[in-house]
Image (tube, rainbow, N blue to C red):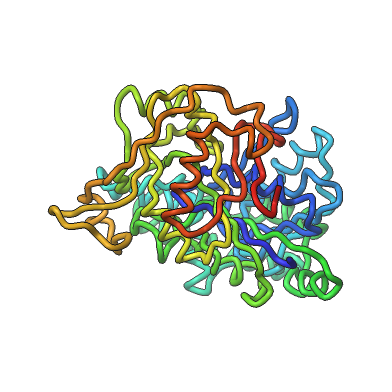
Length: 426
């Protein structure tokens, strides 16, 4: 099984880092293939909690080479702060490799992000204001600066100065404060010299590893319904978190991919604006947020909670060619009397045959629910399928019935070992 892709199937925050950490030990390379420092991954090992933004989760294994692929946009201050924090906690980042083709984020990108959101007024998208979208926009406009350009120090300094000067002209025309161009150049020249130690031609490196028989894990940030093409546009991210994006963002072709694991929570959450058919308001929603600690790893923002939506999950199976599903955070629902699961959508009394192709329609649908009795006991001690209560097995069966894909991993707690493996993975 040379290449495995791990992808979120909802609106993010599904617990991808935990599953990646679970799988990473049997892989030689773990590759982040898209996104930026707007996404946070949390891994709990014993009493230690690691909150990662850019560095791939595989860094916690000494045998794994963590790779930041060409599809990622990299904020150098955040990257080095993260590396320093990990190193201070005894986690070596010397193995980290960063693609020469990855684009860099600069201060003007964050300024553009904030200005764009401010102009939207009440119609804000809910961006994290970290410059991710503007950096991807520069990439598409072919005016971005790639990480590999730091190998020619003077060329890099000139590129940064030229771009900063151009952006200052725009800020001046809008009556905005100007950047200190020389200070920006000096700051990023210092970062660039440090970046050199991590740079690599990661596409050829990964293919060389495959030729030697290595197993590679590709991890995405965000999730299927935040995908720029397949998400609930315009309330989406600026890249392709879906499995197809894993190929473009790593340089590994689709024929090398043998497994695509979709991560879903036993409920659903969303950050920021956008339609959310199963959203819960009031006491039930608050309980999920409080028990599940549903606040953003990076932003600290409260996530919007809702019930598990199998219409979404079916669509994620199609878009990503999922081979199996990891259902996480069932323990959050341990004390609920009833667990609701959405199994269909209706619009104006008519049943929809699939997930709507536009956000306005999605905002108007009514959910068809199946109710499952709560298991009313802690799942934390469960390690085998036989340990799971029959109500949990009913939930897993319902998911498999509607998605036609097996649930291979069941998350029963926050720590690394709080999982039940099923089928061929047990």
